[in-house]
Image (cartoon, rainbow, N blue to C red):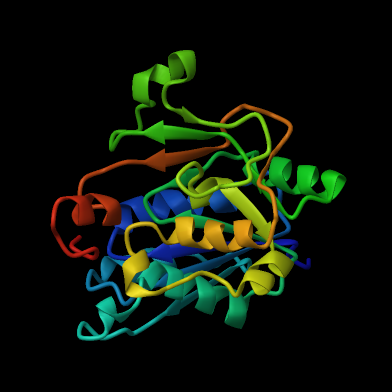
Length: 235
């Protein structure tokens, strides 16, 4: 079975979250997928115990083996995404997932179906905003805890999260992939979305406002570390 969509899962030092993320991809109702796990040389050896516990042929995993002295020369998760796509993916569509976030079972089916019907090259779904215990912010009442826009967006940066976005490989190549300059650590997806915007490509909502993905906000995430004066990889 040829994969129609590659999911690039960036991993660093979070084995408990990682298993949930992997399972959320492999349990998709849409089966023509290729999960590419891009681990950034996690010091915690349990990470690879988790990865090696899977024998599903749809899974590919690689280790960057980045040294500590070189770790902060680029925005590592952007570097890892670029490597995963360029060396390991041959799919028409690309999705992205951080190792502490998760997909709901219908996400890929809905995203691919809409993209195929509409011919849009960048699409997004609604996203739940979750706390560390998996609770929806505000219970999802009156729009709280849900990231969603009902109209196409000219600008995806500062509005969308990369976990809720799917692009074609064509768009990835057209914009030159993700910007991994060190200054992009706090929001490499925004830099990527800016590249898309500069090519006059819109971000289209799919045809359901039901959240299909969960974004976990937690202490010691990359964004939390930067906001609190710590190094991005301070797990």
